Length: 352
Image (cartoon, rainbow, N blue to C red; front, side, top):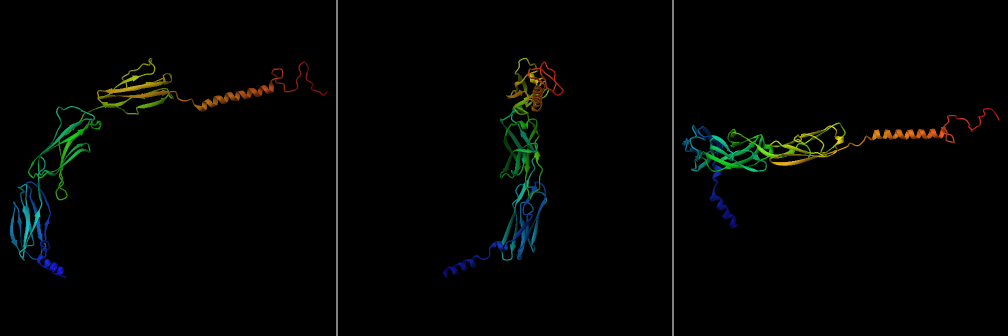
């Protein structure tokens, strides 16, 4: 029973917690404001025994005001980068309540600059290149991101959450791996300040774009090995390849007597049945070489036509065999007479 008495005494000495009586509500609960702009916040006391209220702030402080349950802080010109604003109230029992107002003062970037490595020139596929992005004269150094973009795709992105509140420059170096998909396109840096949901949605600030040139070895547009049948009058061997610089071509033909322009990306065989075999085409540029093989074969014969021809010969043989059995005489002569026949005697047509 002793512990119950001790516990009850502790509760009596502690009294009601301060949070039960101190009920201050800010609307909005947080402010995101551009440097130089105005803003207003209302502070309401939900306590029934509120005696007086006031605002502490380096801008537009309000002295204690009696007989009110709400009090608005109105700033005409946000001329400070850090504003530790606080609403407070005094209750009838002498208790004092506080509620701090988070204020973010921002400044849009003056510019975004993308710095390309020097000396400038084409990229080579597979190599890494440093691309520096500079955000000029921005505040604060948090709620901020810098992205490297291409078309509608984000290539790289970096977020910042630094304690700097004053305007300044922020830089970041991206490592970009060159790829043929970037060749002939543009890349740029893009900065964005994100203060949602309390703050406004601000537009992205972009740097000037950079035209990208990427050197890469040839790649064939169709399969690297093909087998073609000589079913038609002509066959086209397609060796078309993409690459930067534009690929050159060389051919190896199975018959040395064949003539052609060996720098063509296509070879047309007008009489392929005369030149079956393996043809090879090599596409090359300053970045690499690749070879494609074409196997030209004779098309299999039409089985229907072949069967008809064989069938005709078989039928003819059967007819000749039957004719031999019917019309050839025992002594090897040929006769169309179907009656009895004896050599040297006339055939009797009457009764014997």
